[in-house]
Length: 74
Image 1 (cartoon, rainbow, N blue to C red):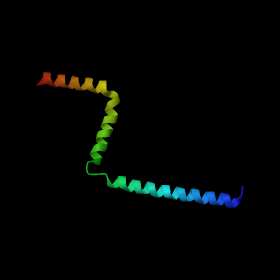
Image 2: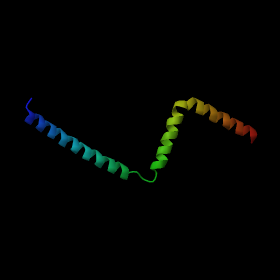
Image 3: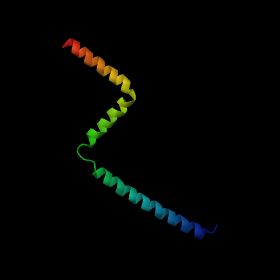
């Protein structure tokens, strides 16, 4: 392969990668600025949901058990 052609292709690829990195940086800046005051609350809610969703039946059973126990005590 001709080194001039290889060098040109490498330069084009390098420019393409730089452009993609600039676009990625711009996207990350926009995402970071869009985080409002409720962002942390949303993340906590997502974490709780991710923990409880696979354990839905168990969570429901324990909730009913606690409610039944509370109604007997009160």
